[in-house]
Every structure is written in C-alpha cells, then in structure tokens.
Image 1 (tube, rainbow, N blue to C red):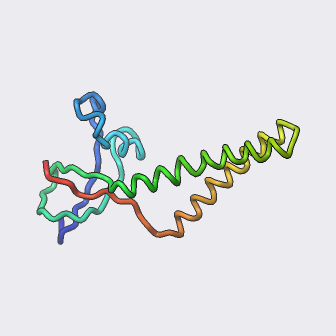
Image 2 (cartoon, helix red, strand yellow):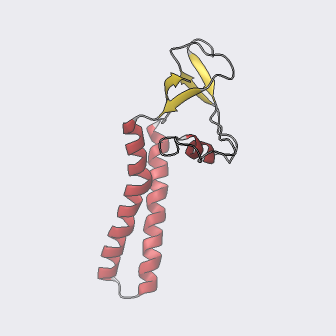
Image 3 (cartoon, rainbow, N blue to C red):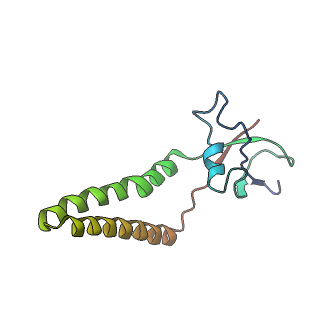
Length: 131
C-alpha cells in the first residue's frame, strides 16, 4: 500500500469452491485466468491504509460485468445465429455453410479483440472492504 494504491493478488486455496460463499466468491474465477494458484497483480485504489498480507474483498462494477458478457458471449452468439440463418438461406451446400459460420464467428472474435484493444477501457475490480 502506497499513496492510496494497493498491489492486490487474488489467490485460490486448495479447498477453494468448497465454502459457503461459493455462489458469490469470484476468487476461483479470477485465479483461473492465470492458473490454479495465483492471478496477476492488480493496482487498486484503496481508501483505507493496508499492510502486506491484509485480506480484502474486491468486486466488479455491474456495468463492467454486463459489458464483458455482451462482448464475450452475446455478440459472438448473435454472429453464429445470424450467419447460420443467412448462409443457410443462400447456400445449399452444408459444408460451405459450416465453413462460413466458423469464419464469421472467428471474424467476430477478431473484430471484438481489435475494438476492445482500441477502446482503452480497462475493467478493474473495486475495493469493497477489509476483512
């Protein structure tokens, strides 16, 4: 902790996922991004002074979570459905339709990655409380 900024790292324990907070805990999901044991370090603005080793609770803003779901799940699913409907109407060969669906889905993911990299909006967790 220095000047209101804390270096935070989420850690999953061996028994992670077996406690009563399993439905609301994001530690397992966050740590899965970087492997089973640890997640990357995050610089987080914190209003309370902290010491090394203090445990804190963090969360994601609802708007950030919903935006992530839109970009990573909803938009690609729409691309699959729309490309299936459009291509199957114009092309009789199922193999070409399947290749077209895969291609349009891949193009959608590439487009999303390109758009989000230019947006410069980082989805960071926010400090909720010290445990």
